[in-house]
Image (cartoon, rainbow, N blue to C red; front, top):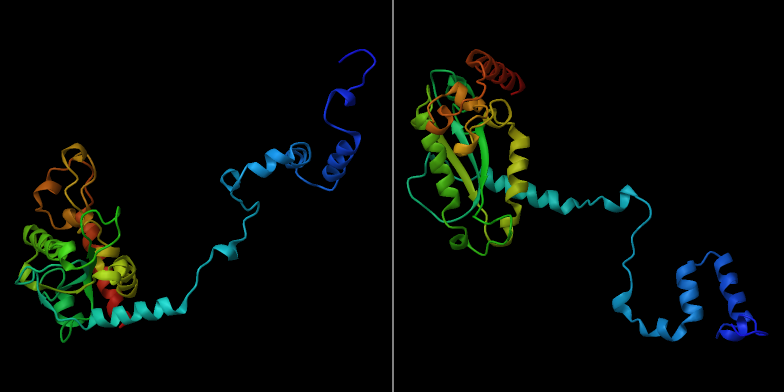
Length: 270
């Protein structure tokens, strides 16, 4: 600054500009945006929309995050009605087929631990599944689009075949005592697979979903052999990969008691 000159004379700022800035600031305007608009109006106009910041809400209001649609439940109930009306087939089905979807496995044993299914629960119709699951195509989580059954491959059939093999290996079980039904969901309806599976499980609370865990487990691989043996494999030992697991084993007597209590409870509710 040269001698005899004040600060204002050395800048393009005039007192009125500073007065406007502080007036806006006092009104609650953002200090940064205020001085930028007032002191550099040309630059502000040239910034363009590409430099604008997205707006983030300062508070959480729960109601703005809750989605509700009665039509969704109606569509889901329609899918459940269709599912329960599909034909029951042996496990595994007698013929390979293409498609992904949801399935239920039924027991009709008339002896052994599960004789209640054959003697009472499923004596005249397939009403009470012992397990409910789903089969989705490879890469489903990365690309949730299935255009047709061909795109899904034989995912559903292969899953049912795996379950049949597990039952064949399990002690005290005979695969001839088990049947299945399933719904193939393709195209846009494939997006309902998870919702339909969850709804049917909630409706029936199947034994091998809710009380005895592990029937649907896959081989965890050699690096996880120290993990706990699944409950299902402790009750029905035989699957080679599960027998190689060296972790804790659930007492068979305790698991059998759980099964008995479950079957008694489900009879009382019917």
